[in-house]
Length: 261
Image 1 (cartoon, rainbow, N blue to C red):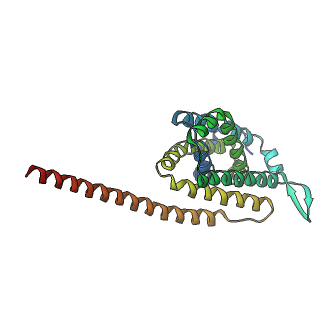
Image 2: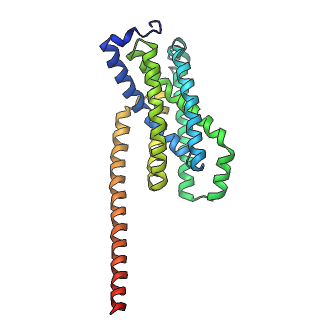
Image 3: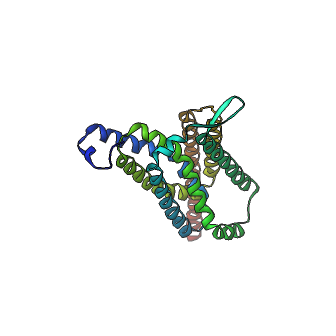
């Protein structure tokens, strides 16, 4: 690992590594963005924005701190105990625990969405749990950070490249989480789709922690296809509402003309 100076600026390969790392960090952050967007749903608009700002700012600090603890991060892949003839590392434990957390959280939210909820009481409860929500944002970001940082170590040799990539990824995550949160609020049916995505990611993390690697590409493709279908449904419902409004307006206009005669 080179000393943190900016000698890499004149190196084309370093710029390629930077762009690749930024794209990778953003793609790997999709799971986190959806989780944050769902987590702040029950807060008021201003409180949700503040929670995203504080949560992601602290997550950025922790991610950069982890980057400067590269030796410790790499050591997370070393076996620490064995179970059923398989060695487990702290990375496996973190991924397994994070996956279980996502599965439990997504299941609770799905149950709440299906069974219905009392809006005012839930909002009040969420407001009282403001810092709990921020803690959850940081916690799940740490889980997603482990793999992305280990990957970053293999792509770039300069710590400043990694820091810049993480900084840009966090900014994109913040902007995207606000947009996705607003979109889910406008189209409630997409919430179930997002929760199903988190459930799949949770299962993938648990499987990864147990040594069964599920390619993320399969999950992203299936959810992208489901998102495309949901997008078509949203467009159809929007067109149906427009047609209904146009028919109602035409009937009203016809009645007015009849009265005028």
